[in-house]
Image (cartoon, rainbow, N blue to C red; front, side, top):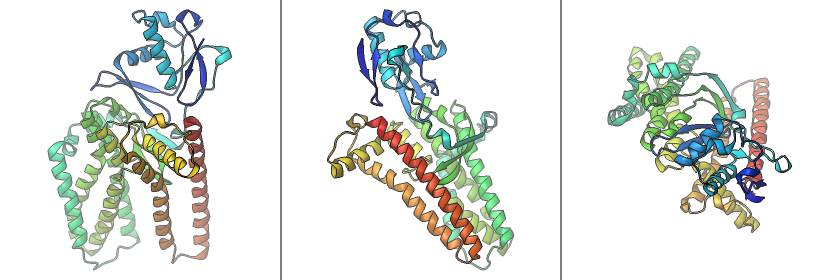
Length: 397
């Protein structure tokens, strides 16, 4: 028997030749594979949102294994030479996609459920997004860029020239909140509509927790099989819609002082949400666009690994972390990883300060109740994050 080392540090026994395999290859569950149109290879999305790109031949072999679990390898790949087949299988095993059917060498399967545990899927928006594919042309290309730029500029000029002649009442605040919620829902449909226009299909729509903040999401993993340009279009479609819809609502401010104050509040929140979405330090639209433009699907994972290793080398004088994950990456990867690591803390400080300002004039009982809930949510999110970081350190050690 020969030995193969997995990325998660587990040593497993790999058969030295095909006739040693009594049963079929064990395919690790929880992965989705799809063809990549630009290269002809296969893109695999793991349950922890890790993205793997396989070459054309290895990708086809993996898809055959998935389509016929337990089948004989010799039957699935009769055209492969023995040494090439073993090298391909060991590469798939090292990536955590398959396992060897040896009872004495079996190892626990790690599926990395971290990201899935904080997702709540509501429905599949594919049919609606296909219907919206044609009007989604307004969000892409040179025309979409011009319209979005005009929309964002118009909203900024409106806020700069706004005169506080009226303060929105409770009803107006609820109207503004409703408009923001509707815009955010349309934001997610924009991702799916542009994806459908580019030849893909969204898988699900729901809510998840990002940096201690609940946000809506549209599963656009199908865009990974498209070219880089199409991936960037899909990632930025939501912000483009916010810019255009926000500008379209500006004429409503002329209905009166109350309407103007309401539109001002909506425009402020809309621009802030759009700006936060473009920050590439958190896994939102800006990050998706950046990783697509660079062609590095696991950019944040690589950057955080580089940052952790740099900190360990500086303070702990150790080099035990997985240098192979970012070998050959540019020097800015460490700085980017440090910024990504600090982003959740920054967001937490900002949200805490805003919450404190909102509760300043509330009754003591209200402040206490909200404070207890906020502490519980913060502690729970911190525990989840620490458990995920521990799993990542174990996998990288």
